[in-house]
Length: 71
Image (cartoon, helix red, strand yellow):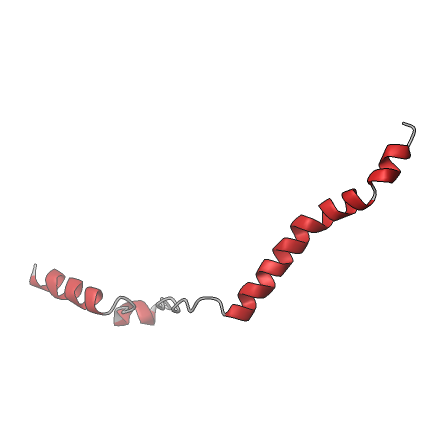
């Protein structure tokens, strides 16, 4: 029980801690997530906006052509 309590305390204080036998087997802790920078967010938002608005703009630009078609 004492070993388990010590191990639990070690994990709660150091969430990225991995035991030495796990490191020997090739198990490594995950890298910390650092988030997106402002320029990456702006790029992602602009790409999403273009992907959503470009088809609608194409259709609206060619409405008269679609109306004049005799299908």
